Length: 137
Image 1 (cartoon, rainbow, N blue to C red):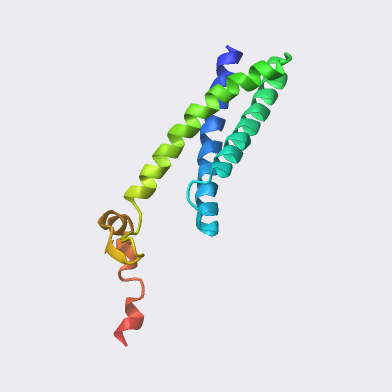
Image 2: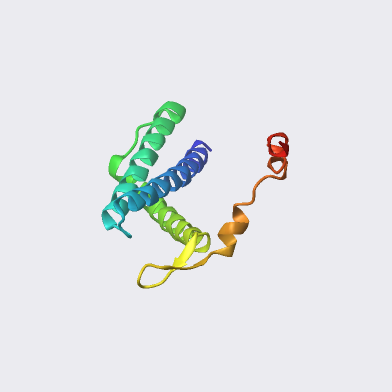
C-alpha cells in the first residue's frame, strides 16, 4: 500500500516539476532568443529526475522505513520522468502555437494578430466602469 502511495505522490511531483521547468525553459528561450536548445531539455530532465528522486527517498525512508536501491530507483524514475516530460513538452508547444500573439512573415513583419489570443485576453466586465467618475469631468 505504501509503495502505491509513494509512486502516486512521485507522479504528482513529476508532473508539477515538469510543468515548472518547461515554463522556465520557455522564458530562458525568450530571454536568449534561441529555439529548442537541447541543453535546456537535458537540464530540465535532470532537474525533474533529482526532484523526483529526492521525493522518493523521503517518502521511502520516512514513511516506509526501508532502504532504497539507488540505481534501480533512478532507472524506474527515469522511465517515469521521460514520458511525462515529453508529453508536457508537446502540450506546452501546442499551447504556445495556438495562443501566440501574431503570425510573422519570413522577413519578420507581422502578418495578422491571432484571434484566439485576443479572445483569451478579455477584460473583466466590472473593470469597464472602474474609472467612470473621472471620465465624466
